[in-house]
Image 1 (cartoon, rainbow, N blue to C red):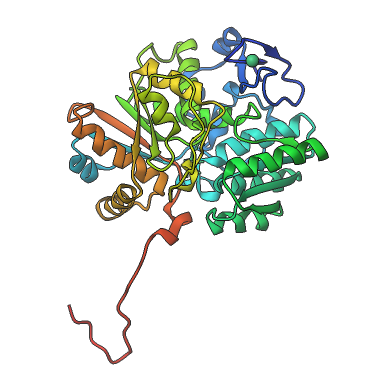
Image 2: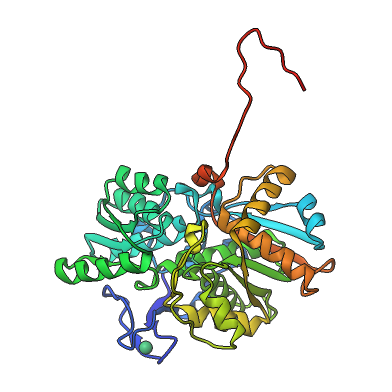
Length: 400
Ligand SMILES: *Cc1c(COP(=O)(O)O)cnc(C)c1O
Ligand SMILES: [Zn+2]
């Protein structure tokens, strides 16, 4: 049973018809999916949230897609792994890593793509088009292939090569752009006007947030229905953070949690930190970041359409926005691997670096139960690890 009622603009309040393909609100803001919460409350039981499917579609009653239209590759239901050694090294009471690297295509982008492609197909689209920093392209290309839809992708020519290969492998028509994701976005915008493709750029379609919302629905069940004190999230467009926040709002409306919230912390790279700049200025909207640069490709987003939604969650939860350097990112990527046996992605490592700063500031510490979202597998970024290994012939002995 689907409880979807309408699409709503969080900026001007405009309501739009969810039975048609929609992009932005006429005012230019992204749209949020709204449900009949009373009907949902009667329909959703605790057992629905704790048992059933072992992918994100366990939460289907809180999602907009009818069963027969679900395009699924086994996304979601990722583990929450305690990292006790790293947690102690960081100086927090408990450190939990929600490891999104186990998703299809190796990142949490699979959640958004599954929901977004399912709805696009449900509403009759036969093609999707998007700019990407890399991982979203890989994910949407995979789900489009499974749905039998055409997919058009533009990505910076310095995006991770593996993600280019994914897009091509899954049959998406893939273009490399001399420029940033924002330049790729401008090219896609012209092309969708010309060819009538459905534009699924970050937050230009409303359903990707719903897919990412399932992270919030999951993590609360996985922590015994007790909110962590803080959640760190590596923010590019900020969709995951917006989604997790929306999950909490809806769980509260259904009576499963109270009004308590974790501190929501958006983490960015020093070379591209528009949300951090907005936070430091106490603003709700961010400014375009000139000359964006960081090895953490997923968070190299100079201006996010949903910035004001990210900032709202940060301010309302008493959270923060924090920037870290690429050197700090690499240091924590290694530490996490050596201390916990986890190859996290650079974006995930950025959140560990941010946590170290927040403990040094006294903002978080030994009393806090902290969760971070490792948004992808380090295996997609093997090029960040430099090796210089000894080579042996058969007769050589190992000398320590
Ligand atoms: C896309 C991406 C992010 C940022 O996600 P947003 O929803 O754009 O904030 C973080 N990490 C990885 C690995 C990504 O692919
Ligand atoms: Zn509007």
